Structures are given as structure tokens and as C-alpha cells.
Image (cartoon, rainbow, N blue to C red; front, side, top):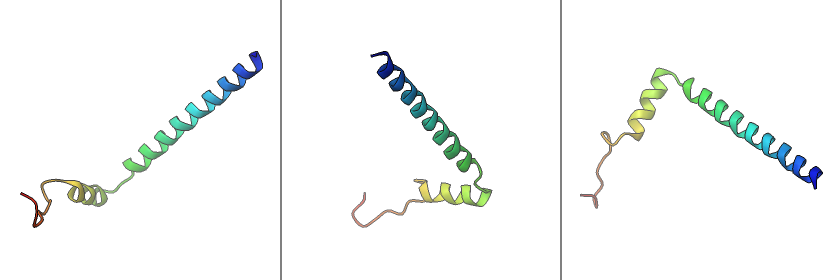
Length: 57
């Protein structure tokens, strides 16, 4: 029983470490955007520049 709990604990720690590493790597990739890429992303996702369609109010 103790063996199973220790293995589950180890896998839980490994899973948490993998999640933290993934979040760290994805956030560092986001911060490496150039000014042009950041501005382009802002324009593409902003409601200010949204074009209204035929069926929108």
C-alpha cells in the first residue's frame, strides 16, 4: 500500500513539474514577440477594429 502511494506521489510531482515547465515556456515565448508582432496581434484581436457584418447590429 505504501509503495502505491509513493508512486502516485511521485507521478503527481512529475505532473505538476511538467505543467509548471509548460506554463513557463509558453509565457517566455509570448514575451519574445517583437513590437510589430505584438501590435499586429492587438489589431487582429481588438474589438475596435472589428468590421460589422451584414447580419450584425
